[in-house]
Length: 636
Image (cartoon, rainbow, N blue to C red; front, side, top):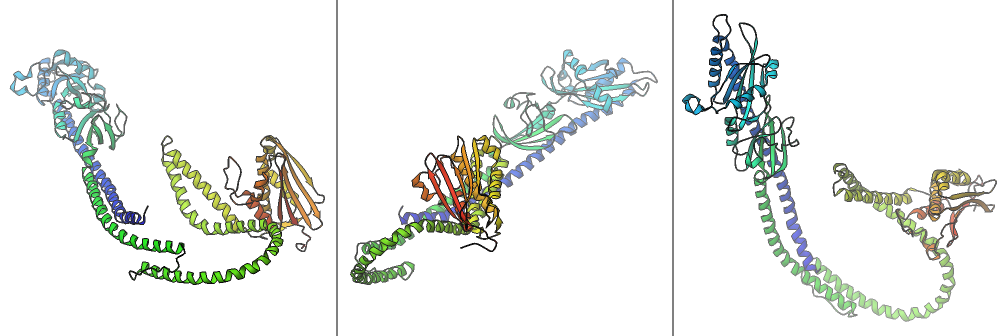
């Protein structure tokens, strides 16, 4: 990509990205605010409708209670009311409300007293035109479904909603218990009530984008004109915060899907009666103001991008032209034309760069002449050095491996010191976010595997940084004290698990000099080094073999610790690099490639030397030589 295009894209990013971020933030804030307002508005509507439903039921129950007090007026003196008096009383109650379809009186044994009051053709009478017609077979439901038990135990009761009457409209039966004054007998006044007026009021509150539903205690729809679009009368409905056929325990607001699309639904129970009110508003209409904010944001982002792109293109064209001049001058210098000079167009950074370019070209021209002069002089005495260099090359090659290893480890230590702080801070944040996501994501979420992989790789990076820091934090001679190498080897074997080695088919052979010589060192550091070598030996013998631990004295001032195996061995071409940081030949490598580097540095910190002998198919032996501790210090 040319510089002009890069500068144009950079300017576009600088001009558009902040606006996009601000627009997106405004959109999310607005969406949250609108959602809160919609939720509260729907709950408020549900509460108001629920209060209205409860007040209507209360009114009809109170009507029955007031009428029950008139019952004693139907008697003559101290005698019980006559059948004619009971019939007139029930007719009076029937006349009290247009919602009453039939009225009946029951004793405390659920036996009906007298005939129920109802009309098969109420439209023939001007005062009863508001009542629903009832047939004798329909009135039988009154005795079967009346909540007599609730009325006798609690004073009043409300039965379940059912389809009643010839019109098959939603009905409910109300019952009120009272005590006769004359005989003190308990009686229940029951009325079958048509809910069409209540339904008409609730349905009349609905709009094109807002649905208001009246449901019973089983979550079924109580509706008439809007029944078809919601599955039919007394059809179980999907309610917020509950399964189909159930109602939520309290006020609830939730977004869910319906046959008409996604909606935001609010539910309020019609306490104390078994009814509930649901207000559903389509998500599209509820979030319409936020959609307008989004469209306006996108429009201004597009305008900013077009304007910023035009300005950036003009600026980039001018700047890239001057950079191209510098590139052309560089090509002239590269071709050997050191006499080339650039023209300085302006007094700015690029102008200063052109001036410096000219000074450089002049200096290079002078340097080339001086180099040519010195070339012949150098050629004359360089031939004399060739022979001496050849003599020293052999010696340098022998020391080169040790120097390179030391430099690699030192550089690695400096790298660990330099980057550990810079890596650990963002790494801790990354790891924490990944772990929080794993806690929040469900087990079957499709993104969980990717978040888990992020966590694993972050943990791996942290282990790499920790190993790098070990090169910095560990100092030669730190906490050194006289120690028994045999004891350190045995502790290392114990930490590796003798039972696990035996189960892997590995036999441990010990060859310790007696008495075992001591040397100064740090037990923890040496255990880490020995454990690393033992684990490597175990990995080299997947089918089992022999692990040899040996302690010997090459002379009176040195003690040698050797760890050998009968595994697959190391390729000769890889031997010079096995102590290099991050070098490995393992096919199923899951570490960080620092194991043998740490071993080499640990032995070096103890003043020791590490040597490796390996043969393909025969095994590998690591020998570590340390100065013997004689009580007064190390021997030279």
